[in-house]
Image (cartoon, rainbow over all chains, first blue to last red; front, side, top):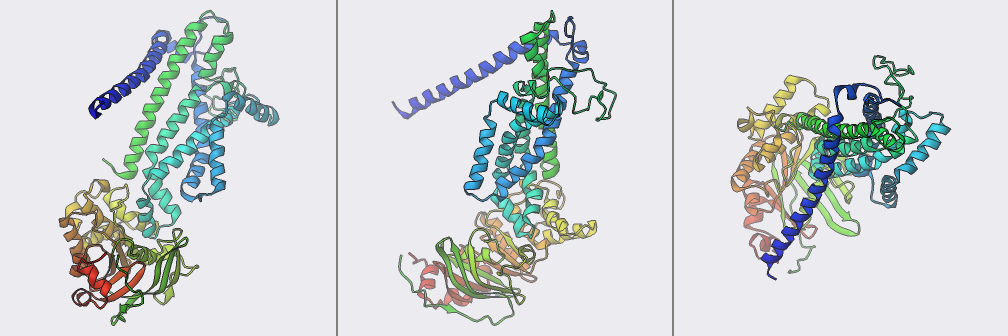
Length: 295
Length: 264
């Protein structure tokens, strides 16, 4: 076989594999959107879920998913940023940092049910938080941390060593070099990490069933006082998310239109994730341009 | 490769005012003894070139002079600057680098605007006054012969500059800090001949106000711009003299072979 033929065969195989991946993706997305979008309406998005009657919406679940994401990021991003900076810029290459990296990887491969039950026992029961958004956010932080830390570490390491030398040679301290030069250059990579982890938070159900709970009590969206129990911002109230809602409808849903709501909610979930992706990318590009003056 | 004696050296005493001297400077990468006993004296407001083959230790040596080898290598010996040994433990290296600044082989502008490239370090060092910052930007870009090319696009990204322009921006960035000494590590080796000529022209201008130490692979470049030249070989300084003398009448066999191309 000459090199031209083998090249053609290899290219062909690669195309087939790519087509398979795209095919599966299009089929899944298409199926979910096709079956779900007809059920989405303004009423569906803005009304509360019904337990027994038909015609319920997903307003609270949708908000809970987003609020949970924000809370999770508020907790996990600073920790991940700090450890990412440490691992990339300060950590010496020895057995200890090797241990940290391995631990981070093990953390990311924990089954989510295990993390959920752990969160249930520790936060919900032991720390007396009850089923709450906060307990859910902390449990999700366990998933988020490895992914975020890794992606931040890698995006920092992708910034050329020459940039660090340039900063240092101008008499800047290491810290100023990292925060002022390396970090801004790493923004796009860090953002990708946030988006990936956000997708996971949106889609997570198993860990939340035991931590954030399966009920979505009626909350007052006009009440901006986060310590008020009725406030939508109260982090200590139970909060069923969209993904948990879908799971619940499909397992123990007793409303006559459970299937329809579940399809609609799935489509909403996917659309929200896509929107979040787009928004985060736009925001990231804007930030990157602002910080680097790239036009 | 021919073996040259390392004991056979010709190093002149600096007749001019000295800006920096190294005394018995040695560098170790782990067990690897990369630089032996470099004792040199650098003149103020002159250009000194460090020449030698790859691996001769000239870049290693240069990087010691503003402590860029910290964390990478162990450096022993003295580096005397303003009556202080800046190689000692308790020296504030960040302060040293404000006085002894470095330009690297590959242009490394920050991913920021041209203006920000220059003002970033200034701001972090406490210069807040807008007029002063603008003045420094203009002065340093003029000093690096880049002003005319970029004065209308100071807020554009520095990453869009050509290699030669980017390298001159890196020089301007150092100059804006008003250092005493400029260290340049093969600043033109990644550039085309026209950009190289511009860099050399720039260095000739800067020589009036700065003491310059430049590592170069290019012997023509050394003979064109340098007042003094040191020849490095396998981690030893074998010859140090006025550039003209070193190139026309080298005292050491190794130097003669290197500059005439009979090396190795």
